[in-house]
Image (cartoon, rainbow, N blue to C red):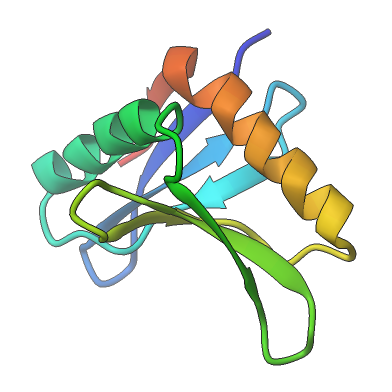
Amino acid sequence: MSGKFRLKKAKDGQFHFNLEASNGQVIATSELYKAKDSALNGIESVRKNSQRAGAFESREASNGKPYFVLKATNGQIVAQSQQYSSKASCEAGVASVQNHAPEATLVDES
């Protein structure tokens, strides 16, 4: 079973997506987009940039927990992870995005 991009419409009418691993766990979340086409472009950006060297940046939340962001070539963040309990689990999250994003199917729930 492959991963999925799940496209949703927020209550305020904006669009966002989650990338889910094959087990259904959310491994990356997008920002909010005003237009559906912009969200679809964001999904394509995650597909491409997940394979680009240097696209992932590890960060630390104010509570000390690690998380990562995925950046496009222009430096814009296109997806962000949840907070992890350890640096090793954060690195495993990056690997999961790299593994699932390129072939993930699109589930449009908008």
